[in-house]
Image (tube, rainbow, N blue to C red):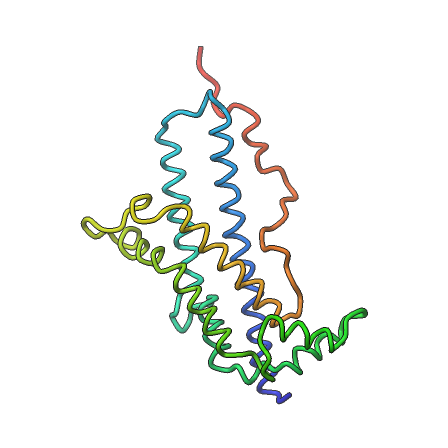
Length: 222
């Protein structure tokens, strides 16, 4: 493989490392919010209408919407999943089956033949990644994020009159599906570039973040 092609792949490898890190953060934030809602719903003493809950929901939605939109950013300077996929689509012949399979030699147990089989399974039967597969993945990313982008443009970046409201025009289902697609593609292209798989991009919690909820936050004055 030519030096220029290797440098191109190395740049993609660096980008996918950062992108999957950002996706992990996105998924962790969703986990914390989901568990926060479960805590409230499971405690009848606090499960009642409250302006603080509305504040948390609004903040979470805005944060997640922006996080998703970072991954579909097409600005030439943006480090995003969308830009990574477009770079691959425009340079598919630089990522060959033989290069992919040769990386399996670094493993003490896997073989190049295993690598070729994995490449065929995930990236097509050509001698390089099938552009139709990449094109379909780009389309999937656009499709499942289009309403979220519209919400950001019309309700977060600025407010247009009478358009796009959360819960009316789309919901947490839309957010969750977009996150699932972003995780799916992050794992897929991490495999392409690093020949390593993730069961999932949700990070493991080595601390007990819920510890802060075990004690009352306020002490009533008597």
